[in-house]
Length: 278
Image (cartoon, rainbow, N blue to C red; front, side):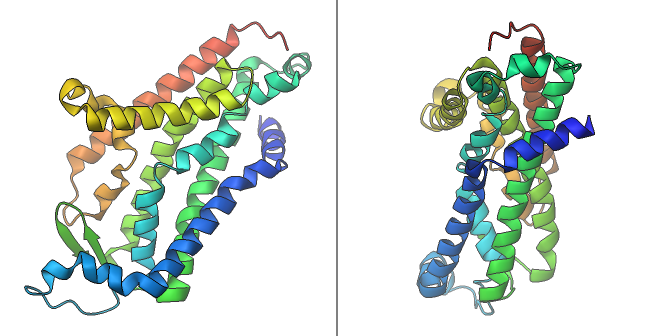
């Protein structure tokens, strides 16, 4: 099994398009940091202008933690697209190139082959997410240093520097879980398709479509919104509140686990009974 995973990882990382995600993330992180370097004071001043009359804010509010938080907040909808480029190609790519029948002539069960492909795509997903967070923190530290994190949502929280890093750690773990759901969805669509474009577009369409519908049509589908996995893709930011909402976090984790398990189970069931014609 380990050998199969190594082979699949080699096949992933030998493709030039695998590095599109890393390149895109690096470009965005660099641009955001440079933007804050030259215009950050004005932007931050605009956001906290209403507080200046009531509070005295001092210190390095534009720092590595701020940069990482901003980047995470802006990329949660884009990261699934980058993930689907690889995960969506894991099965459909083999079908499109006509190599599945050759692979299955070897003494390897379909379940083992599928498990190796899924684990490999999951490793890529984790690598992409860790790269995004690590690069954001490191580049932000080199340019701005560290300092307190100001979180502006429906309420405004200021988290001290020594109370922030652990939050990024837990947010990363949650991000891995939520992106595993996306990987599972893309992997499922890949098993249903004969080309790589379908799963990539399908993953994007489902995530964006559900997000738009749940936002614009809230009154119509309000009862089911708490059970849509797209509702909890950005829930990593729950770790950046003064008091953690354990109930919301538990529900978000449960929903993601349920969808991931359902997508993977259906993929294995479908692929095991699928006629391989290519």
